[in-house]
Amino acid sequence: MNIIFDLDGTLIDSAPDIQFVAQEVLAGWHKQALTLAETRSFIGEGAGVFVTRMMAARDIEASTDNYAAVHAEFLRRYEFAVDKAVFYPGVERVLAALKADGHRLGLCTNKPELPARAVIEKMGLNGIFDAFIAGGMLPSRKPEPAMLLAVLQDLGDGAPLYVGDSEVDSLTAVQGRVPFALFTAGYRKTAISEIPHDWSFENFVALPDIVRAAASGRRRPAV
Ligand SMILES: O=C(O)COP(=O)(O)O
Ligand SMILES: [Mg+2]
Image 1 (spheres, rainbow, N blue to C red):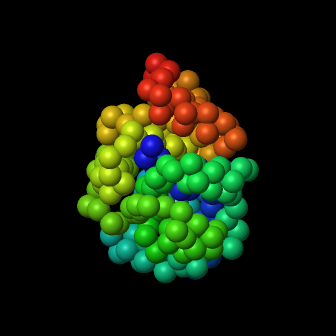
Image 2: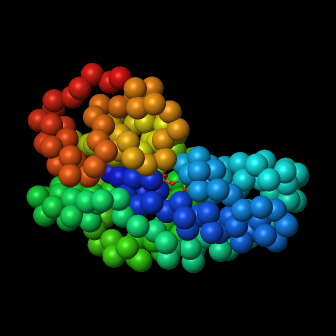
Image 3: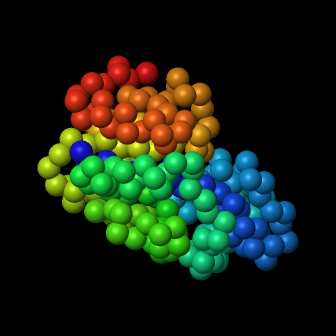
C-alpha cells in the first residue's frame, strides 16, 4: 500500500511548539499569548491561515503591512520550534512496522517546508518517508487535493490510504478520491460523525488493521 500521513495533530502533537512561537511573536505586539486550545484550533491550513486567525484573535489590525510583518516573524521562528513536539502514542512503532511490512510511506502536510523538515529530523523520522510534500512546495494547499495527489504520484503504483486528523484532511481525501482514515485524537473541531471518513481510530495500535482492511478493498461506507 501507499500510506500517506498528515503531520501536525496526526503523527506529532506540535501545538505546544506552535503556541510558543505565537507567544514570542505576540509579545512583540504587546499581546497576550494564545491558549493551547486556541493554538490547536488555528492549526491545519498552514502558517498563513494560522497567522490570520492569530491576528484576529488578538486584535491586530489585518493590514497588508501588519500581516507581512507578523507572518515573516512567525516563519523566522517556526523553523527552530521543535523542542516540545511529541509523537502520539504508538506512532513510532507503527510507522516502523508498516515500513518493515513493505508499505511505502508518504507525508503530506500544510506545515511549511522548513519547520516540517526540522521536526522530522528532530523526531528521528529521516528516511522513513518515501515521498514528502509540505506547505509552500506547490501553489495550492490542502484541502485542494493537489498535494496529496502529488505525493501519491511520487510513491508510484499501489492502493492508497490517507491518514489525517482534521476536517481539512477529510475534504482533501474526498476531493482527491483517496480512502481516508481519521485519527480522532488530534486537532479536529467537529464531531467524528460529521467528518467524512472510511475508518477512524483513536490510537495508532489500531492502524495496521485498517491498513489490512484498506488493502483488501474492504471499506466502510463513508459517514
Ligand atoms: O501546520 C498546519 O497548519 C497544518 O499541518 P498539517 O497539515 O500537518 O496538519
Ligand atoms: Mg493535521
